[in-house]
Amino acid sequence: MKQWYESLFENYARKYDKECFVQGTGGECDFIEQEINRDKSLMIIDIGCGTGRHAIELTKRGYNVTGIDLSESQLKRAREKAKEQGVEIPFQKQDARNLPFESEFDLAIMLCEGGFPLMETDEMNFEILKNATKTLKAKGTFIFTTLNGLFPLFHSVKDFYASVAKEGNAQYQDCSFDLMTFRDHNTHIFEDDLGNKKELSCNERYYVPSEITWLLKTLGYAKIDIFGAKLGAYSRNDTLTTDDFEMLVIAQK
Image (cartoon, rainbow, N blue to C red; front, side, top):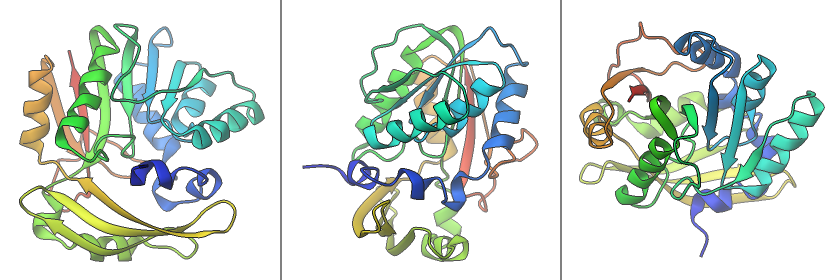
């Protein structure tokens, strides 16, 4: 049986590119460039690359990027977009819980919930962090965003989704946050690229900063920084607060 995140991305690439939460690519890539001192010799892996927005933008700026995703439909669109924009990128269908790369990359990025924290168990989510780490060279850097567990302690997830909803975009209903597991269960209502209306029962894991720090320390990271993740405007100046829906994590081996 397919998991909700597999069903969601089956035929949703063009509509996905119109969602409000994927509109900050340029600013996010500016931040990544700043973090790696614009070193074009570095090898980058984009885990959960989706339709390739970060991989394509970084490649256009002169970086070497490999994009991996679980969804063949998303990858197909990524390849089309790369061709349209005149760049060549190796996009591969891979499961982030079991990656074939070892010590090959200087930087791993995993943005906009690219796999982690969508898995159905904490162990599977940890496998994604473990595999991302395995791809990195000895002094590698890992930059990712994930759902901020401090947010639902102070705010309604349902109200947040309602406040950012736009006509024609996906809707989230029946949100129910479980304090024992830090998972939000919701019904995801959206229209796929063929115009079919779909409803999926989803659940996503929210993490508090101390959990992320502990998980990354067990994987051998020497320096772990966590900030608030502002769409299209990542910055080390944004101290993480209870008002941030996502957190930005920068970990260095």
